[in-house]
Amino acid sequence: MFRRLFTSKFAPDYTLLGVILLLLLIGALMVYSSSYVWADYKYADQFFYLKRQLLFCGAGVVGMFLVMAIPYSAWKKYSKPILFICFVLLLAVLIPGIGMERGGAQSWIGIGAFSIQPAEFMKLGLIIFLAVFLSSRQKYITSFKKGFFPSLILVFTAFGLIMLQPDLGTGVVLVGTCMIMIYTAGARVIHFVGLAAIGVVGLLLLILSAPYRISRITAFINPWQDPLGDGFQIIQSLYAVGPGGLMGLGLGESIQKYFYLPEPQNDFIFSIIGEELGFLGGTFVIGLFALLFWRGIKVALEAPDAHGRFLALGIVSMLTIQVMINISVVIGLIPVTGITLPFLSYGGSSLTLTLCSAGILLNISRYSRL
Image (cartoon, rainbow, N blue to C red):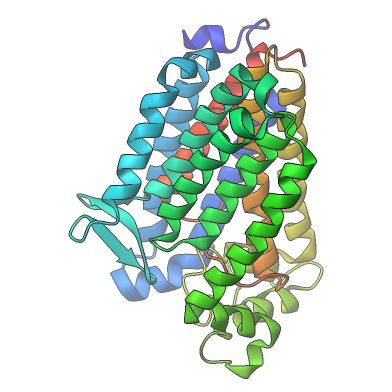
């Protein structure tokens, strides 16, 4: 089966595969560089985070190649059970005793020494289901009642459950991805105008309903108003990116990882990239993501059927939105959201699910007319 993966007729997009593996390599290197100080202090093992990251990478790469061997059309049969399981997990994480709280959000379910984040599963599960739904009902998508509204019910039910954790960043990625899929399916612009008006009001209510979200907004506008509180992360992130200059301080030479920037191996790993590798290193990483986006869009455009096009587009949109949000937070363009940087940030379920998503995209590339 795996030999057939790389025959000339069924070979995946090697450029896309190479970019993914290169990002993983850079990610492992930067996870170690950004975390060894904290790992040595907390666990007396400077390789603690690196070893776990390599374990997650290994599991994710195996998953990616397994998924790449499964014809993407097979997901049609399992799209409903997958979505059902994702909803069950989202409900389960809200139950006290099952869900685990980290950073003020009850977003995790513990499994032995590890934990999973159900919202990550929902992002991929909803993409898989919507790709089937939109490809089979595309002729109805211009109808609010038959196409647009049923899609919204699914998306905002998932969004509502994620917001109960609460996890606004993941919810924004999910909604943004699904809206791109629905729009490209042919939904009418007037429907989006009405939805946007409701969305603005809803977003304002979400912000006003939680004091910590208001604090994040005010910290974004003027982080120096509370430099040791809500503005601390963004200030320390800018202190990392700014001194990096053109060439950076050098690999392993970050100052901010010395207990200034909280958990730099996670959401703010791009800050350490900017500090140690400079503008050129950061630009190279962004260039890799741009190449991934271009090849992914090309896979979607050249897919042999509507199902493949929507599935590829959903995966590429999810990754691109997440990259844009993460880097925008790091350089101070938007408030802190708690979104990881795909393939680079330290993580378990996030990294593994991202690689499995990439596996689906690579499988579609095997059938695309590239």
